[in-house]
Each structure stands twice: as structure tokens, then as C-alpha cells.
Length: 149
Image (cartoon, rainbow, N blue to C red; front, side, top):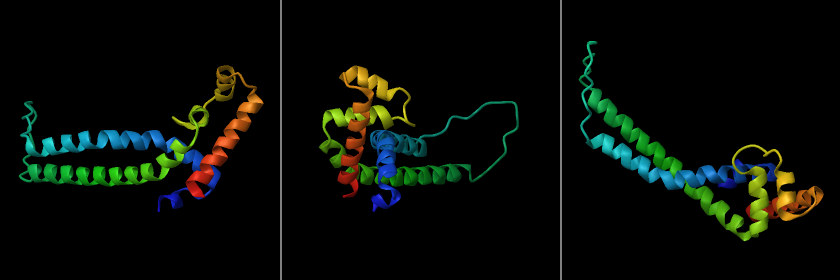
């Protein structure tokens, strides 16, 4: 089960938030990448003209075909893992309020702890920074329960 990847529940919740954009990107882009790999397998390659002698590899076409098949297998495995993650994470994420999602996204989405998130949110939501910290802690606690029980 995917939850075993995230052992420490608070750190795991933050890691899951950080993984969300990458997983969504994998879901969106994998079909195009597989299609490109299939096209590379079936289309003839342009001959590169240069003055340097070309090594004669009689198995070059087969090697390229095998490489594309391996790429497609890796893409399919990555897509399967992303789909499993999304089936686990999205119901919990959608159970949060828009404000909770926004606060957690400001803090954790897109990489490391974002500098100035507390101050930006305090200005945007018209709360004190201390209250923003409480809202963030409550949102993390709620998401943690939704993800891990």
C-alpha cells in the first residue's frame, strides 16, 4: 500500500502534498510520452549526414526498438504509481476546505517550505501570523487523519 512510503505521519503528510503536483503532471503527460515513444518505434529515422565515418551497427534498429519498449514500460509503471497515489490522496485533499487547501499549498506545494508564506497568507486572509500558524497546523492535522486515519 502507498501509505507505507510515508511512515512519520506529519512528515508524510507534507511529503504527500509536495508530491501532488508531480503526480498530477505524470497523469497528464504520460499518454503523450507513450505516444511519442510509439511514433519513434514506427517511424524511420533521418540519416545524419556528416563527414565522420559512421560505425556500422547491424543491430542499431533493434537496440532502438528495445530502448523504446523499455521506456514505454517505465512510463506505464510510473503512471500506475501516480494513479495509485492520486486515488489515495485526492479524496483526502478534496475533503479539506478551500482555505485549508490554499494554506497548505502556499506552505508546501512546489518544493521546500516556501519563505514568506506565513506573511503572504496573513496579508491575504487578514489574520495574524500566529493565527495562520494555527490554521496551518490544524489543516495538516486534519489532512493527516484523512490520509492515515
